[in-house]
Image 1 (cartoon, rainbow, N blue to C red):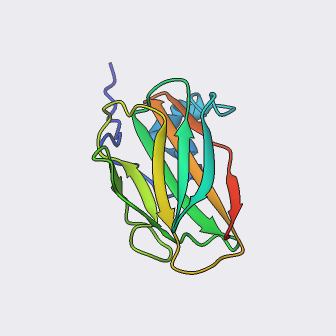
Image 2 (cartoon, rainbow, N blue to C red; image 1 turned 45 degrees about the vertical axis):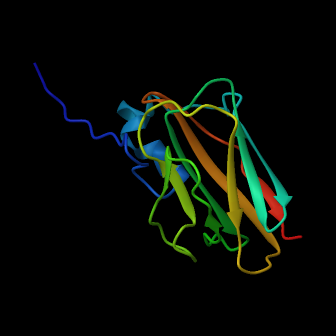
Length: 150
């Protein structure tokens, strides 16, 4: 009999990069858990006053989340407002201290989830990148959402 140690991250995302989930413990042995498609989860972004509101919708609550905004050069920037106790900022590279959000626990987060984001300066184009975790073996990369400064 063999015992394996698996490191999961119920208190936060284990990476700062949505593409790295494919090589995390969530991917399983030889990528057996890597999923195709978005599972019906979608992101929309709209301008409201000084903020952009990114809304996450989907068919069932999620346990985990990693979300951030990058500029056209792939640099993370801007700041998410933290107004949900089930989410926290994650320290990642880029411009600004609060440019990435993740979960605080694996407790279910009901949808829709509205996330407020702002930039201190105008920008040409930005892209929202995200991955959602429904449970350890069930997760989805969401389609990137592009938006422009207005």
